[in-house]
Image 1 (tube, rainbow, N blue to C red):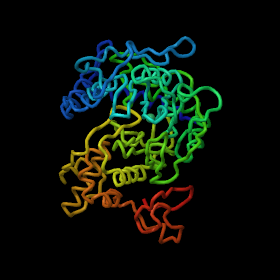
Image 2 (image 1 turned 60 degrees about the vertical axis):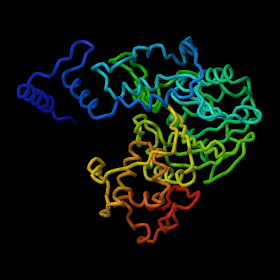
Image 3 (image 1 turned 120 degrees about the horizontal axis):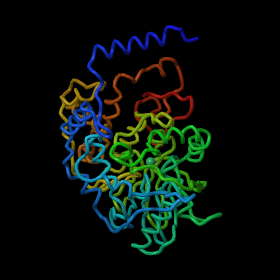
Length: 452
Ligand SMILES: [Zn+2]
């Protein structure tokens, strides 16, 4: 039972706090307090917000778009509408974090874009991207967006500019609904002979997150994405990964081909793929794909242009940062000659020529990192942590290819790699078999011991 004195004590503490400090800052209606202005100014001064590179990447390869982008949804509501975001222009208003404002401007780029010849993306038609790969007989669709309405509109845009071709295959990169929910917008209703490729465990994980926990998670997602807020400089501005969450018809299809090992080569409609099974990364069931003839890596959601969640406010499974980073290392080993990376959100990154030159004193900005005394090793450790934190690993491909990759995992494991699993006589590590070196296709099963 709550003690009767508690409200009195709280009230007293409030009074004391009020009398000790000056009156709390009062913001003008719809405006920012002096504290918010100062905090936003500090952010602006600490970041290279004027760097045009991301804007150049976000606009590169533009082919065309609809104007306006307003996609009808069920119940007379819009499934997707970019018009309310037209206020995102110019410098950041005092109420908005300037980094978020910049991201909102980047996410406002919309339309059909050529990534490289043979690979296109529709961006800005949903929270996520639809990627189209040209096969011998039709389009290989990578991630058919969140709802059927946006997926159909994105595919129609592609057909308008690139030609009317059928969908010859669908790839679900992972078990999050924004990457499969719109499948009914790209495939005809009823049974289909179109192959559907997905990571092992896809159906189980998609069911767990979206059905068993679906109601609670859907409700929490409303708060996480701010879906109910008005679109303005004191309301909803952006969702980081994209403008926001669409409203519409969600579907799912059973995969016909599973990716359960790494590397897993496959030819789909005449196009060569090398798949990477990447479980327990950004999603519990996930894959990445490499197109060796295009030198293009589809990184799914493993390398976004934002600092991704390890534990989402909406309540997805907690993500394993160590295993996630291990999959990135593995991708760099396998696909090191990559020339373009495209993802499930935001814009691609081109080039493999920007090595990282981290300074050991940057360790001060990577709290918790165990930095080796050796200066050269320290550079690698700091660089690894920096790259993971800023999610731009592929830009540092040249550094990685100089044989430093195998050291990264060991160095960033810090002191948490306890020998208890061996000492206690438990089963050997499912990832490395006990020698600390990750085996190809190693998976973590429930209850198995792990090094990390
Ligand atoms: Zn996503």
